[in-house]
Length: 221
Image (cartoon, rainbow, N blue to C red; front, top):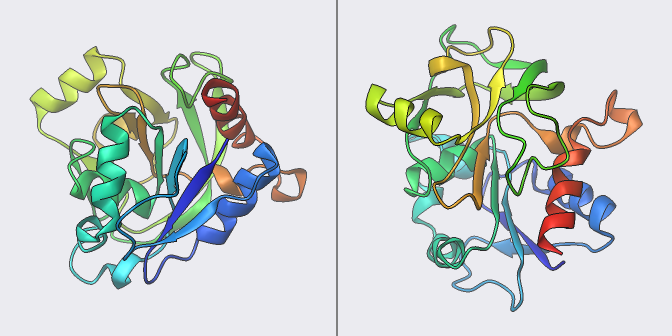
């Protein structure tokens, strides 16, 4: 599987994501600079990493969402190419209109960095096929603006359509209905605040994140 990691000024989890993808797929992803107007031919997975894109000085992910490469990402997503946005990448996806809602300041107004417990809400997506419905897993978070919010109608719709992928199993940031990750209506775009690339090998303390990448490899390949 040929994959691509999008890199913005200020990204700081791009190499972590590269290592995780290469470890699982056996092939290093292309590192695509934000000013590029096209993705490598044959790209079958696009990953948008965590980090403070453009310093997040305006709104988290707002400037990155206007980078030239995001037009190519949106076009690829429209063709069904899987897109994974983690932490700041989730924020970029909402700002780009590829996912509904917005990420606000954490309810406690403080940076949260620790492993948290998640419940797998949808185990039938491209991204979650290696998990079990209702399973509880542990994935690290590291964010200041991870408080997912949307209007009640949007929340009802994504829940009713089974588009909540992960839910916090403990208080973390005040996210509406404890949502930690959502999928688009076509099922090929996932945004999540926790960092699965930080839980892919035993040295990380657990490997609960590895199955997300393994499921993607199995499904896409």
